[in-house]
Image (cartoon, rainbow over all chains, first blue to last red):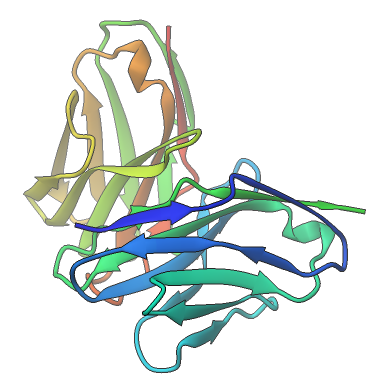
Length: 114
Length: 113
């Protein structure tokens, strides 16, 4: 079985500042890791994912996450945030099996202030 | 965006009444999922389907049933709604398991009074 812990429920930050949203996972098998973003009153959208290969993955809007197997972490970072990045962010893990079931963390609300 | 619609988008009902939520997809995806979203819990899997008439339980399946008679439709039924089932329900689909991305619908906000 897998589990995911997002260490911060809310992260307030000023516009143009850097941000890190923390995610730790536990699993007894190989995993795939995902970050989803949810804007107010909308469904979830995939931000980025780690499947294999390079441990650093990037999204098209400037976010990046690094898979750290020894620390079982998949933290999300952005060097300079915008007001439009205000949203809830979910880290998720999927075991390398055939069911495709995702296990989500509790979510982190990123509040970008002007 | 994957073509996923959910109906209704909002529903208010009373304790003890049956409720059915519908998820419809136009992507011909094999896998479909129902999640519920509650503050402090993230999203939790209720049931999922890996093909027509093939379904299985998720993490929080008690009080819910599902059916999938066609590839494009996945129904979630609350046989007798309770206040603890007040939540936002999301449907998701994926073409395969493993590395495939799950795409989410817009959600249904259900309130049980």
